[in-house]
Image (tube, rainbow, N blue to C red; front, top):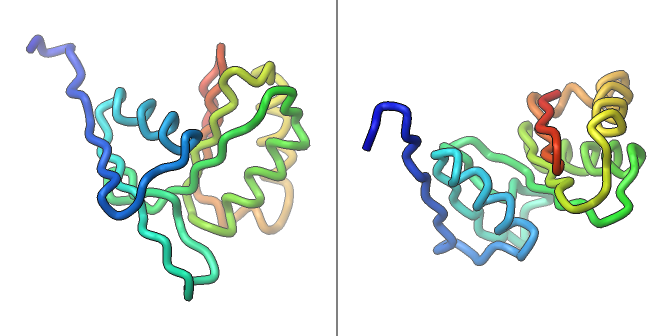
Length: 130
């Protein structure tokens, strides 16, 4: 393996199987060399992360075709209730990078946004952190 080649990460679904949308996000992260472990469902817990990404609790949100900036803001708010870190998959939705950036900016202006330490929105032609 060359010095510039990236190691493929791992996906561990032993605790529970990912949904199709979660699996697409897990595959994206594993392709970047990250280790993604599904978090087991806990009926007694009010909320939980979807996965541990390199050991960090992370919420996954998959957006549907036709997603708008308002949908992104709502998904960020929902993710903030489950984990301090989030990855939103906006691929194949038609969402523009400008709309995603606008949504992140407006979300960050809300007081409850501080619960979300990091957010990543991945689209067809963009990959934004916010």
